[in-house]
Image 1: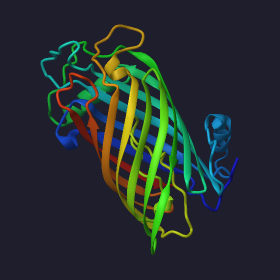
Image 2: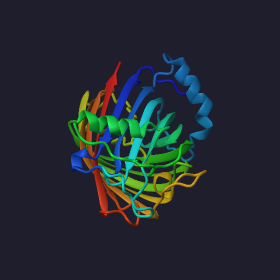
Image 3: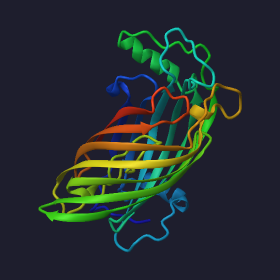
Length: 326
């Protein structure tokens, strides 16, 4: 196990919130949140270091370049995704045309290793519950609309059946950077990965292009799966300015073999639609961060059609990430 007490930023709390309200819609992937805690000083956080060592065999780092190794363990304390058909207060849906209502409530962990500031490998496990009730999606969605003084969507049985869920994901990213001087620069971060389980199964490839300052400190935006991810990784760089920022844009393409929120429940009959096998996301955004692990990031995501009867050829939503060192 690699220990880096002088280059670590210790514990960080990371909150990600995503919603399609910024696009004035209420359908498809309509909201998500994820609260996690990141540990990267294993000489201080012994339990996190032991957990990292326990799952390290799943972290495939074959082909990594030479250079300093930095490692981190992220505990996903609580997270939820909510997916809905077009909101209909009458509760009238057309089977095979309207996607089902469903949610994904989960916990888990992510382990990541950076090598030579040029390669980042990560492995993630998520476990939880899928469905309208077990995932608390219906309760959260109804409560949110009630707070806004809006009528709640009428599900009327048009939902996924409750079932346990599991997701395993491996990803690799590379960083190719150009230095403009005085801490400013640009980089490109291509990535590949595979995610499998009864919730999602897909292969992915993508890239993010960034311009900014102190870019060696981070690995781009972290979005809720499925989506581009920087693994919430922070790598303190004594040669970089304490405060940094980036303007970024990128794309991720996915070959999708399973999406339970479109294909329907695994172990019981449920509403479902015909899934598209190829989906892509276009992203653009900005963030500001420092060497101690503080970060604030805003991202706009444009997602291509996910199923053949989707009312629009795309869906848009926004993502906000806040990270705080404690």
